[in-house]
Image (cartoon, rainbow over all chains, first blue to last red; front, top):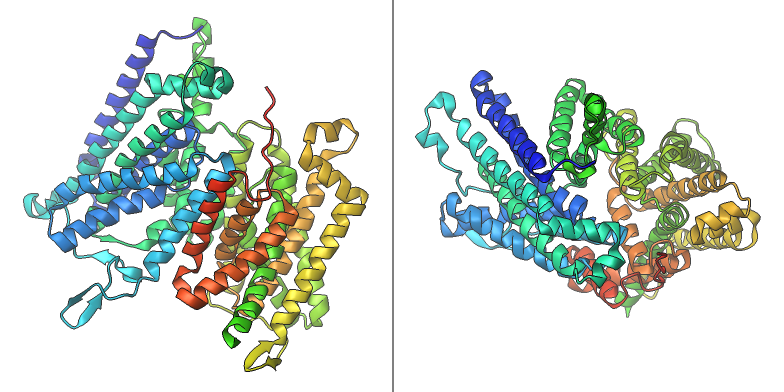
Length: 343
Length: 292
């Protein structure tokens, strides 16, 4: 028995409002710079993962180019700030658009491919971008006697300013600006993903997944919808990159490390692929685990690795899947089953 | 002229290294549909084990290599018993296993880091000297790598072509269900493939470390290149991977020689995109007919 769609919307809305309230109150309860800073980073990663979820979990494109798209957003934002003196508030959107165009180009090259082929090609694109940035030594402009290159090379792109919260906000609340900016971006990104998953586009993908021949025969074009989702989701990924650049006031090629990419992929898988709240759960869980493992610096990688393995082996449906099981048990007396796609 | 000989020598050497690694990946993908993200760490582990065998246990070099191969194979086997055994046949296997093997790689990398530290070490295995073709210096080391790689490929081809084990591996790669129905124990095939894959990864790691240095993350870049080679060849196509490894090795070195080192990898990427636009399932790959 399926829940009525009205019910589902109400539950999405209620969950969303509760989470937003918690996020809004949190910095006032724990106003230390460290907590606020880590939460800001969490919002940025959660944005990336929520959009990755659309690309991978909903549209079924196994893309590993998400961090390349993120980097594109960040770098374009930083370059506009550095070379044209634009305010980050403006260049942020151009970073997003640049990410969309970049993503559409990748999409056209990759969407014909299936599964692992798409994964490996997008991974190669990401690695190429990394290598081109770190080997960039050509002189682009002179700053006094030192010569600076176009992308910042191994030193990273810096000196493009930030979002200007330092000047406006009192010292105690300085870090709150980036925090709420990242939160707003995350809210928009999650709203967009809810919209896509519940909209006809989401239904089209469900149809393509359940019976692709039948769906194609009914006139649903996989390529069109995939390209649409792939490009549109890139906007928020790119803007997240811009927020990252503004928050840290530097953009470096380390953002393209394979380890970070796979760390974020793990957030998605551990949270629950294709689910609305899964990516948030996964991002929160792994950020927490990472925080705990910071105590054991020497074995941090191994601890993370072991947890990943355990999770994927024991709970392949992720945290959202566990929540489902619990919810089903809880509601059994009401004789209601949970729709698979509703969490 | 000298330039071309230089390109040929380096290209073949690089190709020989890629070949061993790519064949290992391709074998594992073909039989298990596992995209092994642990390959990079396994390469590093192989190199370090050979290092320990020579430096700490004073084993003669051939024996050290054998030890490294055995331990490498055991690492592959460990991966089967700890991870893959539990995951085969579950929903979302292909993607989940990427995360799982990545987790495995992290543990392995951390272990190497704790045991040996992050500073690059020099691999004691290797030949000194070389001879001259015209004005070009050809180190014996490079020749040895090409010969070893060639010999290994012949052994792998022989195993796959003629032995009972090879037949069951190929059968599994073609049609897992039918193979099981023919009474072949599929879990045993999986284990065998991972053992062979692990052994090959160890050899590839040793070869790699003789040309550069040992470091815990030394395997990432070669792993990515091996992935690209497998994609161009068609995932799971072992002979295709072998040819593609040498062709791409020569291609990469030529590009680096002519346009500069930084364009080697980007050129490979352009090549792989062109190849995939031309044939979406790899140059030697065949499109699998989907059953309804």
